Structures are given as structure tokens and as C-alpha cells.
Image (tube, rainbow, N blue to C red; front, side, top):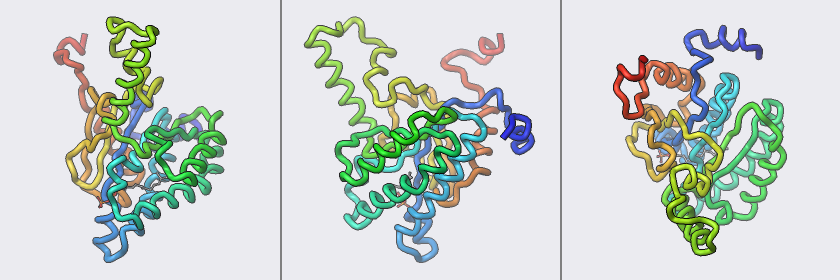
Length: 253
Ligand code: FPP
């Protein structure tokens, strides 16, 4: 779509003032299903529709990075049946969506302990990443077997190794150096974090990266989330003032 047409489609969004990176904790699939007397799996399947809607909308607007919390390291504690189903849903979705991702010029990426995923899931994921690697409009990052404490301890381990080897000195470690040891290396911090389902928690997601992020907690379940809600959040974000520790007056100078 042409820039003019995008502006016509989203008249109240300032296209020159968009976030570069939006992160989402997709919560409430199970409760949404239960509400209508259906198995939790039904909620996850419908959750994929929301993933599609929000990815398309974000790419259309010109947002560069969209990170989705798809499976946390804590999610292994769920019933085995549900874990298996989520893993095969991922394989199926990646296979199904690769063509659409390429058509929309979207690159797939993943963060998390990918070595800990079932072989089939890891393979599908790596294939999806490989087949979309040259796309440039937006990067869709799936957080899989991810937790922020895992990411931070990994970073500290690798920093310690480099320090022992002598390729890094303790005094050289600063924010920018530390970031190079995270799985989000090279990706700007998210300006927006959305969590659905009415829970007001971060649940071990991107703890380092959200230091200055605007948080949005929506009282709807993930399968109910659509492009309209995404646009609402972007509009509210554009009306919030981000001060980074400064005063309002300083910002206006
Ligand atoms: C949270 O709902 C959802 C998840 C843990 C899984 C999210 C996965 C998908 C939307 C499908 C994955 C597909 C792709 C391609 C990313 P919940 O089960 O925690 O719901 P509840 O809190 O109501 O129990």
C-alpha cells in the first residue's frame, strides 16, 4: 500500500511518529476458550488469528520490530498435552505462514533457548527464519522458550568467559556492551509493551529492554485482540509524553 493510502486507512495515527518496536505478551487464550465451554487448545488456535491480524497491521503501518511472547521457560509446567499441542501448532503455523511472510516482506526471527525446543519445532523455526531472512519491511520476533532471567544469566556467563579470556575488561562493561550479550542484540528496545487478559504482570519478559517502555494492559483476551486494538494502543502511545527522567519543560525546548 502507498503511504497516502495507509494514512487514509488510519487517519488518526501519526505515521511519522511511530514506535520502532512493539512487544506483546499474548495472554488469555485458555480463559477465552473456557468462557465458551471449549478446550484451551481452541483458544490457542484462535490466538494465531490475532497474531496474523496484528502482524499485518504493524507491517502496514511501518513498525520495524514486533516481538511476541509465544512460549516462556515456565510454560513447560503446563499439562503435557497442551505443551505438545502448542509445539505442533507452532510448526503448523510457521509452515502455513512462510508464503504470506514473504509476500508481505516480513522477516521471522526468534529469541530464547531454542536448543531446548523439540527437534521438529526447532527445525520448522530455523527453516522459517532461513526462508524469510532477506525480507526488510518488518522483523517478527517470536520469544520461544524465553525468559528474561535466562537471557540475563546467559549474558553474565558469556561476559565472564570473555573477561577470563582477556577479550573484555570489567571497566569496559557498560550498557551498550551489555546489550551485545543479549538475544535482542542490534534490536532497538521496545517503546510499547502490551499485555492482554487483564493481568498486570511482566512475567519474566524482556526485563532489561523495557527500562523505559510504555506499558499497556488490556482487559481483553488474546483471541479477541485485533488490528483495531493495536491502533488504539498506538494512538494512546502517541498522546503520552515520554520524559526519560527529564522534566516536561526540558522536553519542550
Ligand atoms: C497465553 O494464553 C498464550 C500462550 C502461552 C501461547 C501463545 C501462543 C499462540 C497465540 C499461538 C502460537 C503461534 C504463533 C505463530 C506465535 P494462556 O494459555 O496463558 O491463557 P490463560 O492465561 O487464559 O490460561
